[in-house]
Length: 353
Image (cartoon, rainbow, N blue to C red; front, side, top):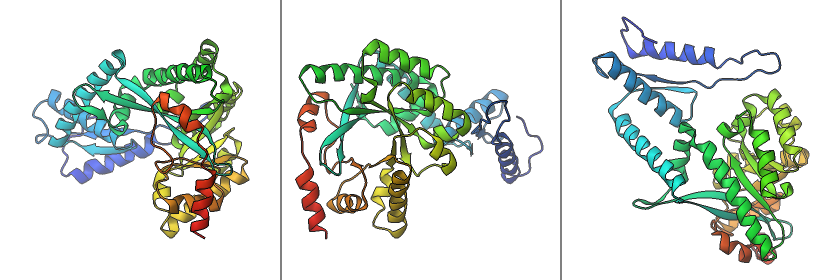
């Protein structure tokens, strides 16, 4: 879109907000009402470019910055974005090479059952060891994978690796346990997701009861009515479903009640903020909601005895965090699975009474 005779950036902001409001309205289709989350980039003449090519290129850069900031927003171009754009492109190329040359690895973080102290499940987490830059944070490369569509290939790789590791753990006689795998919004919105997961389970021979797919709150709420069917179809394969980082989005409780969800995962930002009245109230509410809806509750990011004691006292079902274990190499999982944290949990709870 080209705007002429613009007197001030405020005029552009007002138009951008109107566009976002219009595009964010639900689209009335026959069976469902999908919602679009627009990202808008803005470049101004003459400060951001003296010709059409430069202006379009810089507006495009600003649009990607808006996407990186969480979508459903607009950004004006600035010079700093150029540096970020170059870094983004470099990371994109390196990530493509990483997937081709096996630079990516999986780590597994234990999830401890509060009642028994047993490790009953693991969360699969992707790690990237760059040959020159060392370990690159998922916070840096996952958004790149999402914005370029590489997250689809990455997600398929994760599932294959999980299946391969489960075969190894079974071969050494390890007791069965759930493995939780994150599914990105882009993956979830793929029309052939059900077909792919069904085929994956068939090809790998993985018992579906061992698999839990973690979906973001925003992804499943984008088109709630339609996603009830999609989630039910996934659940019919025999696997479990979790809502990851619950409380950070805008769930409709009426939809949440109808979704075939097994687990609500309390975001670590709420766990870290439990020393405040508001933070504690949110955690209490999520645990109570999970109980009301007959779902499991799990708190992530537990790092202190105070956090453990509070969550255990409130009746959270599962706990995960550095207090118990950092993400582990696959070969370290057997020892972790055999850990019994019942005495630790009992001791901490008693000390905080």
